[in-house]
Structure formats: structure tokens, C-alpha cells
Image (tube, rainbow, N blue to C red; front, side, top):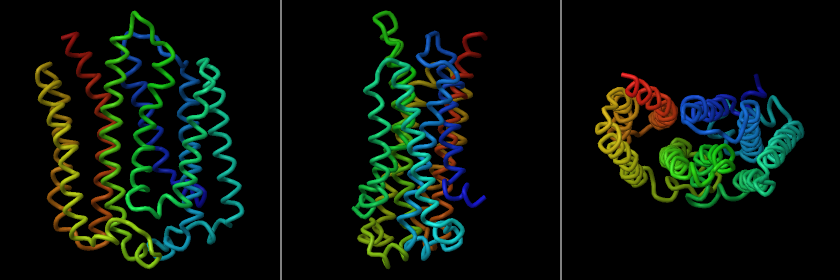
Length: 310
């Protein structure tokens, strides 16, 4: 149990689910040959998850002081797992993730792509040790890495099999993946700031340069409010320009119920949030929005297929 806590098991599960949804709820239904076989794709998911796990472990090692203050019940390193074991786990999962990355890069005959895994691991290490202290840089890195776990699907599954015949179709699929990546980035970036609002007292004590520590909760709320309008505008644009003209009623209904409504709720609530538990609740809502956002790819695909058959 304590090891699952150390690697933030639920977050990793969500990451894996997200990558599986894009392949088995979307890409598999397109009329194209994909670069990776099923088990190679599972290896890609495993590599992503292992590298992310490494990121969580090193983060937990470096965060002992702040976490002891902010969330004493959740601290694992130094309590139920020694720092030495935590480092061993960190090296093991990171090396495994990078190793699988090397293997897959050779499978698709693009050995240079292995560097992606090395760069991501290095970035996660830098994040835990130094970037996190810098204003908004840390938030940006975490949000970008989640978005990148969507982009990497295109890099390994689509890029290697692009040819003159399927170029247009591939570009379209890539742009859909990019839209999802941007959405995941924006929501996660907002969520990172909300988590900083939740942790303001401990971060303040540790001298962290987070937005809430520097600007205070009131001003940060205003910034978050403005930021949360971006995904709302994005989805509304999507519904208006893609779903409605193509009679995708199910996709429209799903987006309005599961993504737009919670987002509006969040936007209204952020202004009134005062307590630690308010921010915690809001951060959870954003996590659910990311999850529902990923599921929407399967809903849209299903809707399109059934619409064609109807």
C-alpha cells in the first residue's frame, strides 16, 4: 500500500487509462495502419507510466519538509519507506521507462526518439530538485508533461507510418491529438495553481515562490478565474464548429454535461473558495474534468461511427 502511495498509483492509472482510450477508443477505428502492435503500444504506456512514477518518487523524496507540514497524513518517504529505498525505486522505474523507450524507438526505426524519454526523466528530476521553486515554471512543467503523454502517442503510433497517401488523414488525427493535449495542458496548469493555493501555508513556511505565496489568494483566484475561461471557450468552439454541424448530438450532450457544467461550477466557486478544503475540492473537480475530457474521445468516436451507420 505504502509503495502505491509513493508512486501516486491513482494518477498513474489515470495516465494509462488516458493513453489506452486514445488508442482503443479512437485511433483503432480510423482506416489507417498504426506503427505499433498492441503489445508494443502497451509497452509505450508502461514506459510513460514508469517515467511518471519516477517523477512522483523523486518529488516525494525532495518534498519531505513541505509535505510534513501541508499533508502530514500523506507523507511516505522517511516514515514508512526509507529515503534509500525510495531512491532505489526511483532509479529502477526510471531506468525501466527509459529502457523501454530505447527499445520502442528502435522498433519504429527512429533510434533518436529515445532521447525523448531521457529528456522527460531529466526534466522531472530537475522539477523536483529546482524548477519547482521557480514561479510558475514548476506548474508549467507538470502541465506540459501530462499534455506530452498525449502527443507521444502520435509520435510513436502515427509519425512512423506517414506517407504521401495518408498525409492529410494523419495530419487531421494529429491535430485532434494536439487539441486534446492543449486542453489537458490548460486544465492541468490551472489545477497546479489551485493545488498551490491549497498548500499556501506550508509553501510559505518553506519559502517557496508559488503564485499564491507571492500574490496572495485573492489575486490568484482572479487569475485562475480568467484562465478557466480558456477551456470553456475551447469546448464551446468545438461544439459549435464540429459537433453541431455534424449532428453529433451525443458528443454535444456529453461535453455539456461532463465538461462544460463542471467547468462553470469551478469558475463560479473559485471566487468564493477560502479554506484549504475548498481548494482541495476544486482541484479534484479539475482532475475529473481531465478524466471526462479523455473519455470524450471515445464518445465522439462512437457517435461518429453510429452516425455513419444510421
